[in-house]
Image (cartoon, rainbow, N blue to C red; front, side):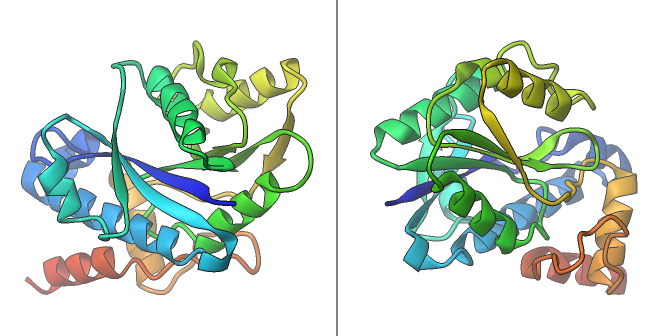
Length: 235
């Protein structure tokens, strides 16, 4: 058994990455922070026990940014180019392609949660390997999800979803229920898209865990992000 753990990512280029954060930090700093987020989420993937069987992927855009991403991601990661412009199509085709690469399950992870606990990724793989078909969702505080896991291709989960809204998780769960698919929910976490969630991250790194965190679920070390934020604070 070999799980595919794919990080949905864009090359961290100023003006094209983390545009909402760029309004607060500036384009160059937002791109720097995005690169650190990607490094830290990749570290969370590597923290999933090798005994489970797992392979990390960078599911990336745009074409031509392979060298940039290879310099950020661990050498053991593989790169898969995103297909399509619609995010639902991107997610659906990625699940299908990775399952066709002989992976027994696929977990797709957003790249904006640098403190995402590796325990959630381990729990997602473990849940997918139980008998029976299901979707695993890691809910985010903004109404979306930090990760989605599948062992079979269910394109309906990604069709006509209003991405980047607070309805993503609710509608995805509804599609699963309508299709008779079991839903396994993981503990709540968060991603960083704006000044408010950046404040949550800064507080967590400073030692104040998120108020919504499930007891026993501890954020990852986020070493790259921590180092950059410390550098900025000392400048």
